[in-house]
Structures are given as C-alpha cells and as structure tokens.
Length: 141
Image 1 (tube, rainbow, N blue to C red):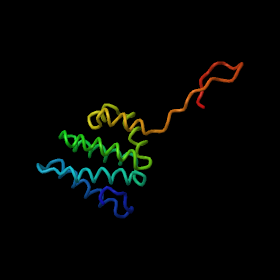
Image 2: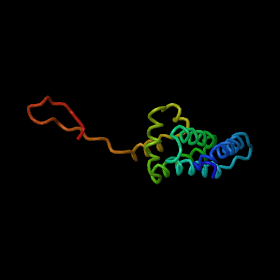
Image 3: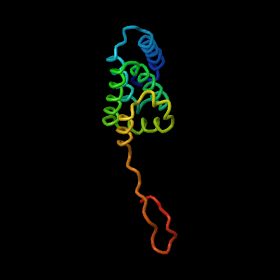
Image 4: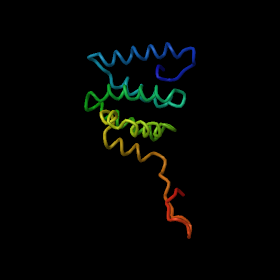
C-alpha cells in the first residue's frame, strides 16, 4: 500500500510512512525479507504511475537492504527478473538504470540477473547495407 502511487492528496503521508518502514528495516535487527520483497513488487507494479527517479530510488534502496544477506541478494535478483518479465515497462526502466550507473547497480544486481534483464529489453535494430550506388553506410532497418 505504501509503495503504490496513490492519489495526490495521500502521497505525502504514504511517502512519510514508507520512509518509516524503510528506516525500521534498515536499522532493525529483525529484518523481514518478506516485507522488502512485497515493497519491491509494489514499486514495480506502481512504476507507471510514479516518477522514474522515485521508482529508481525505491528499487535501489530496497535492493540495498535485501543484499545484506546472501539469501536476500538471491531473492532480490529472482524478484527483479520476475518483475522485469511480468510488469509492462519495468524491464526498460531497469535496463536504463543499469546502463546509466553500472557501478552503483553492480552492488545490488548480480551478473546473471543483469544479463537476464538486459535480454528482456527491446531488440536491437539490425543494420542493413545501403542500396546500390550509395555509400556503404550501415543504417537501422
């Protein structure tokens, strides 16, 4: 509920409660990966109705909290791949984040998950040879 975009009137309260939840998960000795997993799912599901920067920050922070344990890191990678496959537009967002800040995301996304998510992106245009008598440039099909 807290990670969904909601209405403009409820957004400030949702953001404040979300910060309390994340602070609790960050500082608590009894972290619950199920809570962070649900938060990641909600962040992806609501990504179309939320700003890209806010979604990016939410996914990255959730990932940083999950990867503190080997089980959490595996859970984050599995869920990220699943969400990239299932949530329209989410794979494109993740691919953009990975390309824009590869070092920052390397601490969060494992190499296998990275390759899988990148393979879910739009296909690259195939270059084609120019028609006869033109300079032999390569251009997208």
